[in-house]
Amino acid sequence: MRGAMDSILDAIGQTPIVKLQRIGAELEAEIYVKCEYLQPSGSGKDRVARRMIEAAEASGALAPGGTIVEATTGNTGAALAACAAVLGYKCAFVVPDRVSAEKIAALRAYGAKVVVTPSAVDPDDPKSMRPVARELAASIPGAWLVDQWENELNPKGHRLSTGAEIWEQTGGELDAIVAGIGSGGTLTGIGRHLKSKRRDIAVVGVDPVGSLIHDFVVSGRVTPPTAFELEGIGVDFFPKTLDAGVLDEVVRVDDGAAFRMARDLVRLEGLYVGGSSGAAVAGAIEWARRVGGPRKVLVLLPDGAGGYLSKIFNDEWMTEHGFLAETEGLGTVRALIQQKGGAGVITAKHTDRVRDVIGRMKSNGISQLPVMRDGELIGAVAEVDLLRYLVSGESSLDGEVAPLVERDYSLVDPGTPIETLQARMNEARMAIVLDEGRVVGVVTKIDLIDYLARRAV
Ligand code: PMP
Image (tube, rainbow, N blue to C red; front, top):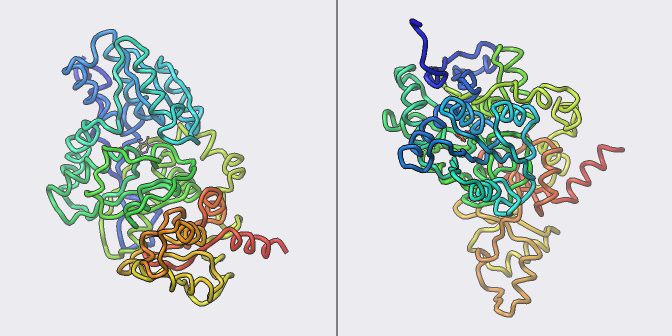
């Protein structure tokens, strides 16, 4: 028929860019969104799934009758499954258990086999999604493991498709691109393309509280990952497909702020999007407010609301998780710091002698302190680190404190909700509060107990 496409795969790409009407209207910047959620399988992953499959066919890794295997939080799986339906392959996917029931049901609707693995395990644990996917691929004859976190065609596909399309659509009239980071393929690909055209376009990543990327980019350190509810973005390992060199900045967003923004995007703008879209817009607004100026900011909206109806768009689930209204919750880290009072934060320089650091802890009655180099946070030192050092026998009180620096802390900011802080303190010894790169507070478990106890009276 005239005007018809050969298959749904030919409908991939050419998503609209839309200006936000209400959200962010108070900003000097203009916020635009690219509707990747309008693609055939419901996400931006369609663009790379087809390319990865075609390359595997060309190399012989995937042959007729073969099975496509992947670890996924749903969207890469759906994109691969849609291609597999058209091209005649079978699919088997491994998903972590935080993935919504709707997204798992969608994979099964495409006819895929789905294996669910625990989210709360170390990424190298044999029960974790990627090792399970490797096992699964090894056990199925004719299986091809996609591995979106290592597959170079993931960022390359986004460079050639999403990046080129954005440049063409906007005529290069944009000052910043903002996207959440999962495998990092989307932002790496788009960022590389846009920077090759105009170096001054800011590439801003959005990372959930609990993921590794933000703290690594800000402090150069890997702080322990903690649990979060956002799907599709956030990592507990470093994906090879992320080129941190292309990022100008990483903004961190917590689950609650991301989910509330997703609900606002649906209700105030008619954009039917999911949680990572909410995170990206919330991060973009925070960035635009901070840098100021009449910038044109483009934000990627990766997937739709339909995958999250039982979670983000379900008031009961949102309330149970303390996500519904920040003001009705336990307050923020800012309130805790204010209540704690005191005279600023006591820190050490990396060249300070151990003897002086012990003296500073003693005279201020504290048991740990952040360590700085040239005004930047490089880690923290705590009583236990000093003890270990002193009993090791190789210790010298005149040695520099730098080798004792530990990373057993969590980075939060003043706007972090107390609920999020509490969740992070389950696993970290203390939290360091950073406000635009400056250390503005140190929070220990007893500070948190004191804050909550005072609220309770
Ligand atoms: N949002 C959602 C919902 C996703 O599924 C993904 C892909 N994991 C992303 C954002 C991030 O994309 P990328 O993997 O390219 O960083």
